[in-house]
Length: 377
Image (cartoon, rainbow, N blue to C red; front, side, top):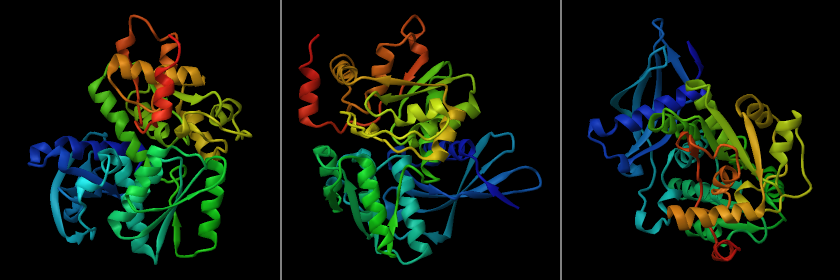
């Protein structure tokens, strides 16, 4: 029989593969997870089995391995190559691909996998995405790896650093609309008028939360005493994956989302229990700039998230400065949102070591960085 893999179980399987890769002679740096199947077979003994597509070394070496997890949830990996399944992906010149963050990591691997699966299912000539930058770079990379055209819709006056990331991967860029919601509508129209185009949207993709959920496992493995985890919230793909895994493994841990005060649509929706749109999402944290939540995502965050904090623009800038000058960590405003929330929260105290901040994203423009460093002490 077959059944859907829950996000926590899928994350455990992925993390187990990554964790045990070194013992099997693979370098963690060369071990890229490209994706996993959404269904698994369950034997009469309660043993789950799922095939996971991996890339060892470069993407041209991608092949299938079998992984199993006991019914109790304890995962163990079986590294057994299946020569009957291969993944045809052109080799990449890593020296020209830009920031390694745009190539590696579970989330971007799942973007590659999702697109590869769609290409096998039908005739796709190009992949389309709407983005404020980071997701667009992942889609552009996936398209380049798989030899398909990419068209990324960005809002006007987008982050120039993120725009360059996308351009470096060879994607066509359309800058139009005031924010991500307008870019989304344009991307939808593009696909509606072109049957050979595939819209890869991170806000409702079913696989991406499984990839971001691996972050939750890493946190619990490295900080088992953690009491609270702060996570930036844009379209909620990041926090839904982390929260689903954390609440399954350690339900007592509080998961706290952070949104920009000037882009509070998911906060308002979480609070009211229904989709609440906003007229604008004009925030310096472009990665958090959403104004039209998705109903299914609202239901998920209401079930999984303990609290949501709103942070102001000055607090975001102050957090960028603090991370850079005190921790030597470069973060864009969206990535620094979790730190901004903690810097003014009641969690600052003797148990500060039990709090984890997810700092996601370092694609900050020169103008924003300069502004952060010029704010009054």
